[in-house]
Length: 222
Image (cartoon, rainbow, N blue to C red; front, side):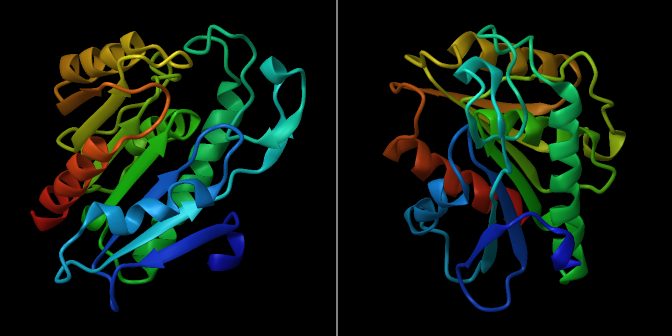
Protein backbone atom coordinates (compact mmCIF):
# COMPACT_ATOMS: atom_id res chain seq x y z
CA UNK A 1 0.00 0.00 0.00
CA UNK A 2 3.00 2.29 0.49
CA UNK A 3 2.89 3.44 -3.14
CA UNK A 4 -0.43 5.22 -2.48
CA UNK A 5 0.97 7.33 0.34
CA UNK A 6 2.19 10.90 0.22
CA UNK A 7 5.98 11.29 0.39
CA UNK A 8 7.06 11.05 4.02
CA UNK A 9 9.84 10.51 6.54
CA UNK A 10 9.95 7.59 8.95
CA UNK A 11 11.94 7.37 12.18
CA UNK A 12 11.88 4.29 14.42
CA UNK A 13 13.06 4.68 18.01
CA UNK A 14 14.01 0.98 18.07
CA UNK A 15 13.54 -2.19 16.06
CA UNK A 16 10.13 -3.83 15.72
CA UNK A 17 7.84 -0.88 16.59
CA UNK A 18 4.73 -1.67 18.60
CA UNK A 19 3.15 1.76 18.10
CA UNK A 20 3.05 4.59 15.57
CA UNK A 21 2.75 8.36 15.67
CA UNK A 22 1.64 10.07 12.46
CA UNK A 23 2.56 13.77 12.72
CA UNK A 24 1.49 16.53 10.33
CA UNK A 25 3.46 19.75 9.89
CA UNK A 26 2.15 23.29 9.44
CA UNK A 27 1.77 25.64 6.46
CA UNK A 28 4.91 26.11 4.36
CA UNK A 29 6.90 23.43 6.16
CA UNK A 30 7.39 19.71 5.45
CA UNK A 31 7.89 16.45 7.30
CA UNK A 32 11.39 17.46 8.32
CA UNK A 33 9.95 20.13 10.60
CA UNK A 34 9.22 17.84 13.56
CA UNK A 35 11.55 14.92 12.86
CA UNK A 36 14.32 16.37 15.08
CA UNK A 37 11.94 16.31 18.06
CA UNK A 38 11.86 12.49 18.25
CA UNK A 39 14.99 12.01 20.41
CA UNK A 40 13.98 14.98 22.59
CA UNK A 41 10.79 13.16 23.57
CA UNK A 42 12.98 10.74 25.56
CA UNK A 43 10.74 7.74 25.01
CA UNK A 44 11.74 4.61 26.94
CA UNK A 45 13.80 2.01 25.08
CA UNK A 46 11.22 -0.68 25.82
CA UNK A 47 8.55 1.25 23.88
CA UNK A 48 9.67 1.10 20.22
CA UNK A 49 7.69 3.65 18.20
CA UNK A 50 7.58 4.43 14.49
CA UNK A 51 7.15 8.15 13.76
CA UNK A 52 5.73 9.03 10.34
CA UNK A 53 6.05 12.59 9.06
CA UNK A 54 4.13 13.11 5.79
CA UNK A 55 4.94 15.97 3.39
CA UNK A 56 1.97 18.08 2.31
CA UNK A 57 1.58 18.70 -1.45
CA UNK A 58 2.44 22.17 -2.78
CA UNK A 59 -0.62 24.25 -3.64
CA UNK A 60 -1.54 27.91 -4.18
CA UNK A 61 -2.40 29.61 -0.85
CA UNK A 62 -4.80 32.54 -1.14
CA UNK A 63 -3.75 34.47 1.99
CA UNK A 64 -0.11 34.32 0.83
CA UNK A 65 -0.89 36.08 -2.46
CA UNK A 66 -1.45 32.78 -4.21
CA UNK A 67 2.14 31.63 -3.74
CA UNK A 68 2.62 27.91 -4.14
CA UNK A 69 3.88 26.20 -0.98
CA UNK A 70 3.40 23.02 1.02
CA UNK A 71 -0.11 23.14 2.50
CA UNK A 72 -2.78 20.72 3.62
CA UNK A 73 -5.51 23.07 2.34
CA UNK A 74 -6.03 26.61 1.10
CA UNK A 75 -6.70 29.41 3.60
CA UNK A 76 -9.07 31.89 2.02
CA UNK A 77 -9.11 34.65 4.64
CA UNK A 78 -6.95 35.82 7.53
CA UNK A 79 -9.82 34.91 9.84
CA UNK A 80 -8.44 31.38 9.66
CA UNK A 81 -10.84 29.66 12.00
CA UNK A 82 -13.69 30.21 9.53
CA UNK A 83 -12.64 30.60 5.90
CA UNK A 84 -10.71 27.54 4.79
CA UNK A 85 -11.17 25.14 1.89
CA UNK A 86 -12.90 22.32 3.77
CA UNK A 87 -12.95 20.09 0.68
CA UNK A 88 -9.16 20.21 0.52
CA UNK A 89 -8.91 19.73 4.29
CA UNK A 90 -11.04 16.60 4.15
CA UNK A 91 -8.99 15.32 1.20
CA UNK A 92 -5.89 15.70 3.37
CA UNK A 93 -7.69 13.83 6.16
CA UNK A 94 -8.33 11.08 3.60
CA UNK A 95 -4.57 10.95 2.99
CA UNK A 96 -4.04 10.63 6.74
CA UNK A 97 -6.52 7.73 6.75
CA UNK A 98 -4.24 5.96 4.27
CA UNK A 99 -1.29 6.33 6.63
CA UNK A 100 -3.39 4.85 9.46
CA UNK A 101 -4.37 1.92 7.24
CA UNK A 102 -0.75 1.45 6.19
CA UNK A 103 0.44 1.24 9.79
CA UNK A 104 -2.27 -1.32 10.51
CA UNK A 105 -1.19 -3.36 7.49
CA UNK A 106 2.33 -3.41 8.98
CA UNK A 107 1.08 -4.99 12.17
CA UNK A 108 0.38 -1.93 14.35
CA UNK A 109 -3.00 -2.15 16.06
CA UNK A 110 -5.05 1.02 15.55
CA UNK A 111 -5.27 1.38 19.36
CA UNK A 112 -1.50 1.98 19.29
CA UNK A 113 -1.63 4.76 16.68
CA UNK A 114 -1.50 8.43 17.71
CA UNK A 115 -2.40 11.27 15.34
CA UNK A 116 -0.58 14.58 15.84
CA UNK A 117 -0.55 17.87 13.99
CA UNK A 118 0.73 21.42 14.24
CA UNK A 119 -1.30 24.43 13.04
CA UNK A 120 -2.78 23.45 9.63
CA UNK A 121 -1.67 19.90 10.31
CA UNK A 122 -3.53 20.02 13.61
CA UNK A 123 -6.78 21.01 11.89
CA UNK A 124 -6.43 17.99 9.60
CA UNK A 125 -5.53 15.76 12.56
CA UNK A 126 -8.68 16.84 14.42
CA UNK A 127 -10.89 16.04 11.43
CA UNK A 128 -9.22 12.70 10.69
CA UNK A 129 -9.03 11.39 14.26
CA UNK A 130 -12.49 12.41 15.40
CA UNK A 131 -14.21 10.85 12.37
CA UNK A 132 -11.97 7.74 12.37
CA UNK A 133 -13.82 4.42 12.63
CA UNK A 134 -10.77 2.58 13.99
CA UNK A 135 -10.10 3.10 17.69
CA UNK A 136 -6.95 5.21 18.09
CA UNK A 137 -4.50 5.71 20.97
CA UNK A 138 -4.59 9.50 21.09
CA UNK A 139 -4.84 12.88 19.36
CA UNK A 140 -2.31 15.70 19.76
CA UNK A 141 -3.42 19.13 18.48
CA UNK A 142 -0.66 21.76 18.60
CA UNK A 143 -1.16 25.51 18.05
CA UNK A 144 -4.21 24.82 15.95
CA UNK A 145 -7.95 25.37 15.55
CA UNK A 146 -11.01 23.25 14.85
CA UNK A 147 -11.61 24.25 11.22
CA UNK A 148 -14.32 21.64 10.62
CA UNK A 149 -16.08 21.99 13.98
CA UNK A 150 -19.44 22.51 12.24
CA UNK A 151 -19.11 19.73 9.69
CA UNK A 152 -17.01 16.90 11.16
CA UNK A 153 -18.88 13.61 11.60
CA UNK A 154 -17.84 12.46 15.07
CA UNK A 155 -17.37 8.69 15.26
CA UNK A 156 -18.27 6.94 18.50
CA UNK A 157 -15.27 4.62 18.05
CA UNK A 158 -13.04 7.40 19.38
CA UNK A 159 -15.28 9.19 21.84
CA UNK A 160 -12.91 8.08 24.64
CA UNK A 161 -9.72 9.01 22.80
CA UNK A 162 -7.19 10.92 24.95
CA UNK A 163 -6.78 14.41 23.48
CA UNK A 164 -3.90 16.78 24.23
CA UNK A 165 -4.16 20.41 23.11
CA UNK A 166 -1.03 22.60 23.21
CA UNK A 167 -0.93 26.32 22.50
CA UNK A 168 1.28 29.35 22.96
CA UNK A 169 -0.28 32.16 24.96
CA UNK A 170 1.50 34.71 22.73
CA UNK A 171 0.61 33.04 19.41
CA UNK A 172 0.06 35.82 16.80
CA UNK A 173 -0.91 33.38 14.02
CA UNK A 174 -3.50 31.15 15.69
CA UNK A 175 -4.83 32.93 18.80
CA UNK A 176 -4.85 30.88 22.00
CA UNK A 177 -8.61 31.51 22.19
CA UNK A 178 -9.06 29.07 19.28
CA UNK A 179 -7.27 26.36 21.22
CA UNK A 180 -9.54 27.00 24.18
CA UNK A 181 -12.56 26.86 21.89
CA UNK A 182 -11.49 23.42 20.64
CA UNK A 183 -11.09 22.30 24.25
CA UNK A 184 -14.59 23.51 25.10
CA UNK A 185 -16.19 21.84 22.06
CA UNK A 186 -14.57 18.48 22.78
CA UNK A 187 -15.38 18.66 26.48
CA UNK A 188 -19.02 19.31 25.60
CA UNK A 189 -18.93 16.20 23.40
CA UNK A 190 -17.57 14.12 26.28
CA UNK A 191 -13.93 13.81 25.22
CA UNK A 192 -11.14 13.64 27.79
CA UNK A 193 -8.95 16.67 27.03
CA UNK A 194 -5.68 17.92 28.49
CA UNK A 195 -5.15 21.57 27.50
CA UNK A 196 -1.66 22.94 28.14
CA UNK A 197 -0.73 26.57 27.50
CA UNK A 198 2.92 27.61 27.20
CA UNK A 199 4.74 30.99 27.27
CA UNK A 200 5.56 30.93 23.53
CA UNK A 201 4.36 32.18 20.15
CA UNK A 202 3.48 29.96 17.14
CA UNK A 203 6.16 27.43 17.94
CA UNK A 204 7.20 24.61 20.26
CA UNK A 205 9.23 24.81 23.46
CA UNK A 206 11.32 22.41 25.55
CA UNK A 207 8.78 22.14 28.38
CA UNK A 208 6.09 21.25 25.84
CA UNK A 209 8.27 18.56 24.23
CA UNK A 210 8.85 16.95 27.63
CA UNK A 211 5.11 17.01 28.34
CA UNK A 212 4.34 15.46 24.95
CA UNK A 213 6.86 12.68 25.59
CA UNK A 214 5.21 11.80 28.91
CA UNK A 215 1.75 11.94 27.35
CA UNK A 216 2.77 9.64 24.48
CA UNK A 217 4.04 7.06 26.96
CA UNK A 218 0.79 7.24 28.93
CA UNK A 219 -1.33 6.81 25.80
CA UNK A 220 0.73 3.94 24.41
CA UNK A 221 1.16 2.09 27.69
CA UNK A 222 -2.55 1.53 28.20
